[in-house]
Image (tube, rainbow, N blue to C red; front, side, top):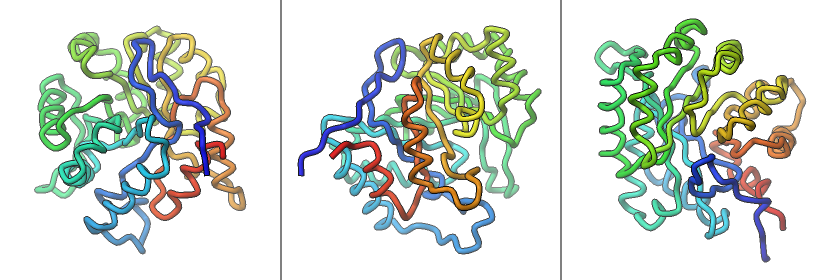
Length: 270
């Protein structure tokens, strides 16, 4: 069966490599996800290998797959690194996006957040050691911090200036969960330096003006959690299709562990 893509997306105003419209989220590869999932079983190396091989088989070979991970996802980066060590040619077909700022402290068994420039450099170095190269480097602004704390991070001009020095070798961005902070930063012109931004899909659906403003700035948009906030009875695959039709959205991440095939097929026209 011949296939063709619904379209790759140039990942930013600076001409980053084109990627397939559905990306791979890897939270479940690193720790229990969702957190309240009592049936979670830590994946074996073979499960992760089969999962990723299936993704590379489905996605057209002339397109790259965005694979999303984070220092805070515990063993996710190391598990991905082990896979690409075994399949180095597939690393060439990948766009790896990782995040820094939120970390899991093994000794204290708790999540900690640190947003200094020195922390960013140390995190980037460790990620590179595990994954050989990083294409996208996000500040990880999650619900572990408040909206006002996230705002203070983005207002730190010294941090921003230092992160922009990573360009053009690495694209810099933010992964943010706080809608109000996102709106405030747009109003105060604090996001022009971004190449890429990631946030939950519900924000894109409920606040289209945010998408339009980001698009006007030439910032590549990645959406996560496409089905997490779906009302009971709503179809998950339809949610992906709806998001992929939003003008300005570059990639929708799937965090699925068990429905990869049918999800990735949404990005392909048969």
